[in-house]
Image (tube, rainbow, N blue to C red; front, side):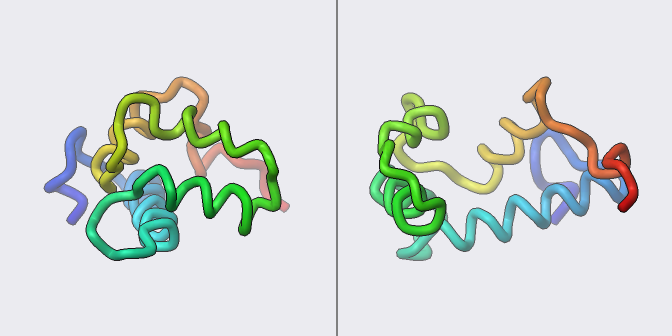
Length: 91
């Protein structure tokens, strides 16, 4: 599973990150069709995050109305703001 995504995940930190994204994706993909649609992300924002600003979904979706795990992964890997798990402070 780790080698079939692009960019490929390498190392334990990548593997944990990919598994976390898969878990998040599964939680959001209510109809289990392999993609997160706008209505699913809006529902998550309102019900689970307790937010009333439903326009927040635009940051996730932009032009894409159906987000796959691989697309989440690609976004994660190319985001300059992602913080590697191994660099988090120990508690």
